[in-house]
Length: 130
Image (cartoon, rainbow, N blue to C red; front, top):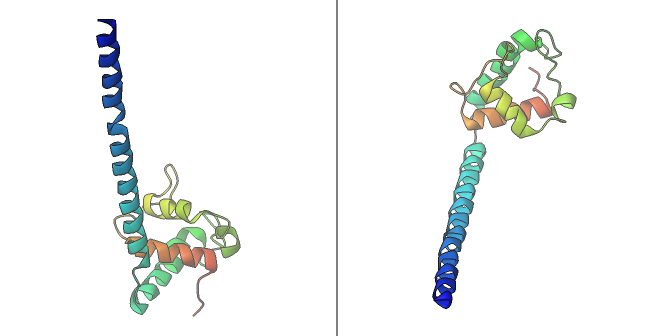
């Protein structure tokens, strides 16, 4: 009987371990699909017209709080040398979700992933001058 219990508990523990690799594979596959989706969205090429609109948005809408030259005002300065030090993912999150308890609004409902990627690029590399 002791052997029977031992055999039963071993087979039970094997059963418990079997789903783990399947769960890990599913989780890894889901993560990979998510990353590919973000990469695909980020690689969408914006047209000249949309890029011009986003530059205008950055100068006018963002400039209304961060200063018309983005050197700071109500909001902090958005100068390339400062923004280049920031993580692009963190900048994306701030643009998309805003900053709670500050005047920084969320833009998630108004901007596509490609729009945000371009804005982060502008912030980190500099806004073209007219």
